[in-house]
Length: 251
Image 1 (cartoon, rainbow, N blue to C red):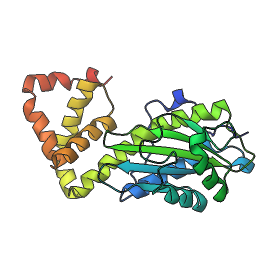
Image 2: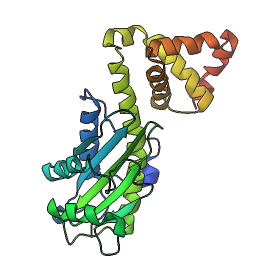
Image 3: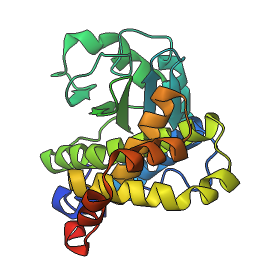
Image 4: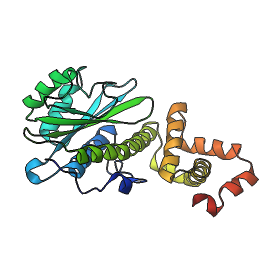
């Protein structure tokens, strides 16, 4: 059987994020990093090593995909125009094991494509992204391999971390596309940091999650992150701002 990888159980992953931003310039590169991270974290022994394919659907954009290996990449690219597989937009609402005789008849076409690309079984897990986007990560193994219940749980826990990590990466790339360059970000760092502190205090969230909220607002309004941050600070009275930034609020 395929066993869970070295990443640990879901409790170990709480509050963690995958680095899907460093050395990436766009969404496609972040998807590739995610696919490789999933394959590494969820693979079992060498003889049962797994590949991974990832698909992203965004409103108003063509699907984007990536794979951890040439075969996984080819399968994912083949799925971009399909509507009968787990990677199709809105097709997957919960974890599904595909390829076994017990799998749902709805995946028959996808089962054939798995075999054509050299795989015998797939574990598809949806990613929880923003309302404008959907995603799925698919673990792929050769014929003869199986998914035990522990690996299914591992994949679901990994997907929770991957969802937060990919959402942050998408937000960062969106900011870059909106025209924020490094100099402007550095010049606005103070107001951004303070605004993130306000959001952290109000929502009891991490800095990464607070910055993600700023980035989402920046994209939706088509304004710079610095402008969103300054707008937040102007709306908070000085006394209230001082109270919210007391050290105990970050405990």
